[in-house]
Amino acid sequence: MRHDYEIAVGPIHPALKEPIMLRLTIEGEEIVDVDVIASQNHRGIEWIGMNRNNAIQSLYLAERICGICNFCHPSNLVMAIEEIADIEVPDRAQYIRVIQGELERIHSHLLWAGVAAHEIGFDSLLHYTWMVREKVMDVLEAVNGNRVTKAIIMYGGVRRDIDEEKAKLIRKMCSYYREAFNKLAKLFLEDDTIKKRTREIGILKYEDAMKLAAAGPTARASGVKKDVRQDFPYFAYPDFDVHAITPDKLLGYTVGDVYDRIVVRLLEVKQSLEIIEEALDNMPPGDIIAEKKLVKLMAKIKASEGEAVARYEAPRGEDIHYVMLKQGYEPLYSWKVRAPTYINILSWRPMLLGYQIADIPIIAASIDPCLSCTNRFAVVKDGEEKIINADYFHRLSIEKTRRLKK
Amino acid sequence: MIPKAFKRSLWVFHINSGSCNGCDIEIIAALTPRYDAERFGIKLVGSPRHADVIAFTGPVTNDMKDKVIRIIEQTPDPKVIVVIGSCGIGGGVFHESYHLAGPIDKLYPNAKYFYVPGCPPRPEAIIQAFAKAWEWLEEVEKK
Image 1 (cartoon, chains in turn purple, cyan):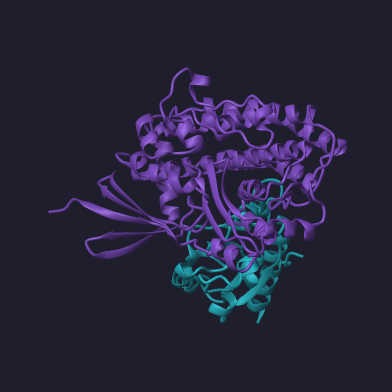
Image 2: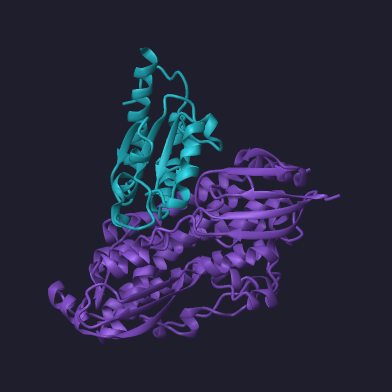
């Protein structure tokens, strides 16, 4: 007689931003097997880039691969094409790109911290984190003209300069976050409830992280010292002293659990603030774009041929784009995108094995999958199908928090 | 803007049919303290059966087509759908793609639609759309 049963999570579920499906085999409360079924969010972006759009239009399409990391995908495309077409980027533009990338990291990590708090039933912390996050959204809007999709990067530079006035705003934001950081760190790292729900939960061992090629904060929280900004610096990063952040910097040891992932992301927010301030101080004067005339730029890209791979440290991990251009062919001849979540999803299996159903939301969210919306689960037991919505799931999670508090 | 009598709070169920998350994070931003839609009683619920209005994002990929329709059918009548973002309205940057079944108003015409254009729209615009949907629901109730 079989004692285990299956829970299907998704494709529509709260802890998953992209629709994706998880099939979990449960024995009692314990998770014994995990299977991931992806592809529900396939929009054919690469196909559009290779057939309908020209290279400049594809830039804005790349922005919409992911609305949260909407700077890293176009950055990758830009880096690849700049390498193929041999476009020299002015120094000032490279510094502005660094600032933009770090602003995005701050907003993304704070967003994640809020979602993580929500997943363990700590909603007041979600609201607090998102309130703090609005500050960086204001700055993004002031600097770029839009809160989320920025449309700031262009082949050969950036489209808008950061002048004194904007620099002042960004500096103000940095000092605001320095204060807020201490409070956030206290709330996230010293709170007993959070500690109980995240310590020794969802452990990804160093060996597993290496084997599964985990990327970004997920890998760093397991003690893997890798960061594209440190290993293969792009933009103006060679000028900065960026080191991969591992949890032992703060705690002295690494466990590789959900708590460690919180530590890494919080420390990275601090690191981003340092990089932004350094970049503002050392920003060289000069042009912000190599070629202002789009027609001329387009002609140059159309005339070039070759292939390139670009790497970028996105908030979720290493993002890779492969681009191939062919002379006289207006769209990209070939375009392959490998987003960080794609590899990090694999680490769900070692993370989830052996833990309880109530831990699924926080473990699933801990790798910061490009998360989204609707909450529904189908529990299949003895051939009968029963739909359980995420409320039930969320309630389980809250109940566990309460039990631990007692 | 808000109907006179708050007969009930507006409960919202959020469906992502393959959007880029841009609109989804703005929906959450609309609920959190800066914009605070919850002060009007507007809140996200975990089950489509509890929802008065659906917040819909994304251009509907082929994989999500059946699932999205199944969820919309589970919501009580009258079905009100607020489509958030340009790609939900007409495909946006993804139009002409081989893997799109949408937009949703063509797939499921028997509902009242409200549109919030923008890529992504601002949280204020999202709240306004819900206020409009709310007014419409009050009208229906009066009849």
